[in-house]
Length: 383
Image (cartoon, rainbow, N blue to C red; front, side):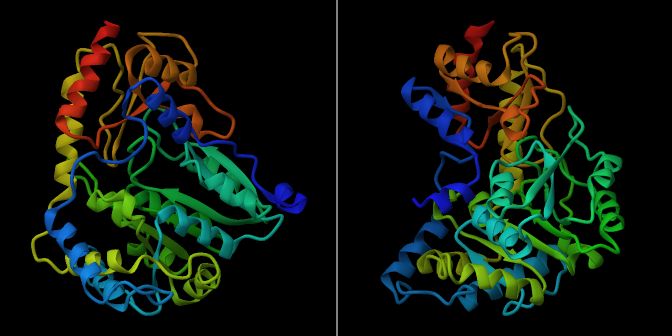
């Protein structure tokens, strides 16, 4: 790597997911750290991938994505949210949501710009910003419910602010935004040049009869926003690395200028499979499936000395406190739990730039029942 490239690389180090997964493998621990399911995908979806590979869907797809998939996405968004999205001009298929977030930042930021990040935050956001020699301005959410302190967000805005990134349902805490949060954001950015990147990868994993509000449902914000989605999180096939980004035509043009020189094209057989799958009249209720796993996990740990401040409102993840067990910093506690009790988790401080430590860890409950049972059996040795 050239010296110039080294100077421009973000000082992010190795991700906590890599660290904890490696430690889990080293100690033969049950991995409840990284967010991926360990159960099979829907057989109908698997059959469609096989059908695509056996057919004529093995060459490059168009840069923006297979037209049939973009049309299926537009129809799906219309069915679920009542949105009218232009499949040709407003939807781009991407190799995963993390990639989509990177390209959105790349299309917005110049050296010296600022982007607001609400922490705790998914670990790619800040390196993405810094890669473009911009500054991440971090605003903490209010623990333990992780709501937005809008006064602090307003104080973070400057003449250099060009973007704010939102994540709902939230990783790592499972909190979700209300419609009033979007109204607050709209009032904040009105009259500015601030664009919004809305990370909505867990949008269908919302629990307890609550609903997900998308940035696309807010007419004012929709015109200045990138909405980022993940098929992998919805259909439990994270290894397919397939997502999509919805933005108004002008922002989409800027996005595709970046995308065409990075991935250019996305895996064609998987695009075909998802396009056909979305057309099924009866798709599984993925929110109910994941809520069942959350509820089962909470029932398993209810007598353990972890503090559940509130059940996750969405996502794959449950955040818990461990103050009744140890006064170790959360990273050291997570490592201890992996080494000594064979269960890997993620410390919440890893999602803060300054490593703010509220003595919280995150469990991934998107697992088979037997996996959750085996993990909790090991955790019972703490008592």
